[in-house]
Length: 197
Length: 198
Image (cartoon, rainbow over all chains, first blue to last red; front, side, top):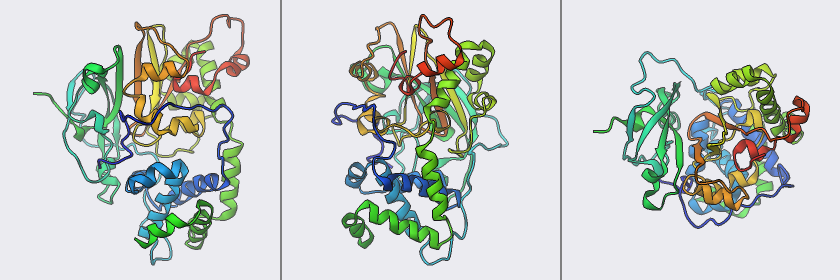
């Protein structure tokens, strides 16, 4: 979805402030939420993709104002409401564990292949950042097939796909104002990629 | 929406208590286990694991080669790589050289190599870092005190799937005589994310 979470390239957020002495959890509830999410997901409340999608479905203003663990709390509430409503516990637990899967076909692309990302704007969860949509790159690495987040996030199943690291020249992404001598590498699933014409 | 209205008016402390009570009632978590996990996070040695990995790679060329080939099996040799981040597919380690500087970000959420660096720092999760690292990495790094020469290529790794990235920083000069323990103490978290050089 074209949401507030898709931040790559945005303007207006100012400087990055590093504080060397920051606490891991400045407020006690943040540590509690961190642990609760770990356990609830381990118990099958939601898979990682459904969890991320629950964060992305937050009202954009809340996404910005609630902070990192605030978003986790919001997503946990959303998923509990949607999945634990009237039932005693999780009826169909989501799979927990590595997303790597064996699939019965070969990768479509190889290292060095030129590719172009698709120009699609799915309403649901996806892992192609907006700034890299409809852009030309080169396959830098072929990874094992992994659970496909786009379908796994909303109960349509794992439908595993090969995963690639694709290299994009900064100029291809940001045009004439791009910094020189910079390359952005993005991990992209096979359906996002097309062979350029 | 009623639920959203409630979420707007209650403090996160109250909401956390409420969701914990619900998850306990439904049998998904036990409060004692949550206490223990929070304590574990707080005592977490976090980036120390990564620092040790770096020090081993600096002193053992065969380990360095295995680490760059496939990170997860290599860190397991050192007893790291437990299941704090169970869905991860691979750990990929990128080596800085005189001509190449690597920088790690996650623009879509805040994916981070928990297995070697622990929980991410606040700045890594900030909107500013996520927005800028991919568009203007040189300017961002300069603001953070790292001025890269124009002939150094910057490679930014946007962790958009379940591959996690860690940077293997260059070994500082004048450290030839040091052993793994002393070298480990020199390695900072931020150098393994790529916003600092040692």
